[in-house]
Amino acid sequence: MQENTKLIVEYQELDKNLKAIEDELNGSEVAKKYLVARKFLSTVKESLSDLDKKAQVATDSYNASVKELESLVSSAKELESSLDGCETEEEIEYLKKKYQDASAKISLAEQKVNALSKEMADLYNEYRKLGQQNKVMKEQYDEFAPKLDELKNSKKDEVQKLRAELKALEGKIDKTLMEKYLTRRKDKKFPIVFGLDLSKKLNYCPFCATSMPMTFMEELSSGEIKECESCHRLIYGFESKK
Ligand SMILES: [Zn+2]
Image (cartoon, rainbow, N blue to C red):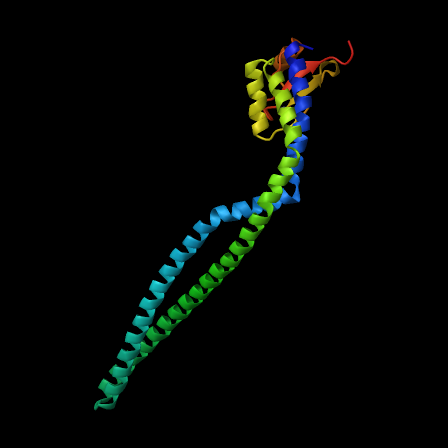
């Protein structure tokens, strides 16, 4: 095994311990509760202001529709009273027709007012629910933020020691290779480095099983560390039997 390969494998072995602590912290109930609350609180203001805007639009439409309804009702009343003063059949028929039209319009306007009134009630409920949730999430945040700090603190020494050891090793490793490793580490890929047993003559990525071209295999044989085109894991070759 080449020196670079040995070092990066060694680095990953050490890094495994750090990853395990990170996973333990991130996977804890405390971290989950904290993150849920933080995520909610980061978007709640925007959600409330969206609801505010929607409520404003609905209220404006509602007020306009109520006005329209009132004016339709008063015109219908006028028609009704002028019906009393009618003398000819034609006049009566004409006014009756107009009255029917007005009634139809009133019924449509009423439907619109009712729909808007329901929309406003729904928005109000949503707003209230979000407000209650906001209170719960604030409490959750206040409870779990210090608990998470406490949990992190309990691992602090261990983490610091591992980080120092990793840093020391990092200096010995080829810069490009190290950068590739650290990029994947940031992307939450782990493990990152995989050995492929070349004596088995199988040209598949040991992580994702994507088949690899012959040139790739040859480069592995010559000691290069290659990157899988599919999962971007770093692969080195070794021979279990010669
Ligand atoms: Zn792969």
